[in-house]
Amino acid sequence: MRNTSRHLVIRVLFLEGVLLIVAFVWAWLRKLSLSGAFSMTLGHSLAGLCIGLFLLGTNYVLVEYGSRSFKFFRTVQGLIECEISPLFKQFNLTAIAAVALLSGLAEELLFRGVLQAEIGLCFASILFGAAHVWSKAAIAYGVYAAIVGLFFGITYLWSGNLWTPTLAHMVNNLAALLYYRHTLTHAKKSVVSDQTPL
Image (cartoon, rainbow, N blue to C red; front, top):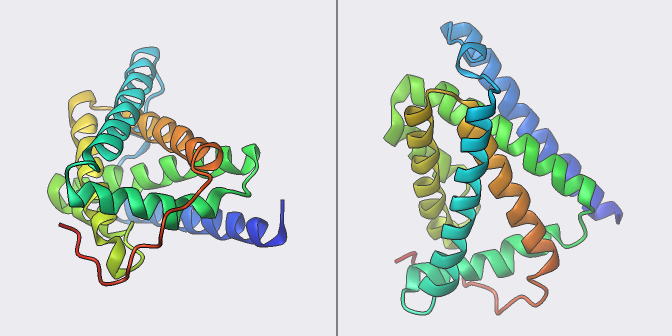
């Protein structure tokens, strides 16, 4: 792995580690029981796996086919191909697995386990989406991430177990990162910074 890629992996893992620490500290200060909401049962594991695969397929259909008719999905697709995919081109499988697993765990503990309990489903999902915006052009991706966050939040409410959306998140991230690394080899023209999301 190149030095630049190694540094990027370290930065991503560090950021997700910070989110994980924030989640635990916040939960401790507010006396929120994350361990009580987190149970790795077989049933919840199977549910998380199936939901993750369902989300993965839905994302593919929406972005791949929705981009043919809707500007919003074309923007999201362009951001994935031009901005996100190139970041993971040099990641090895170990790095991809580490990023996918840690990001799924840290983000679910913080946004669903802590923030959703504190400020509710909708606001937690909006913050989740905002956390995925890195530029003006990426607002569309943030909106899409907020919708995905809403889906994870509903999954948590439905299952009553934080492990279910966490595993779904991990499965989705792992498959998506592998797809970015192995499939999206030719980036399209970069999305302009002032492109509107809708």
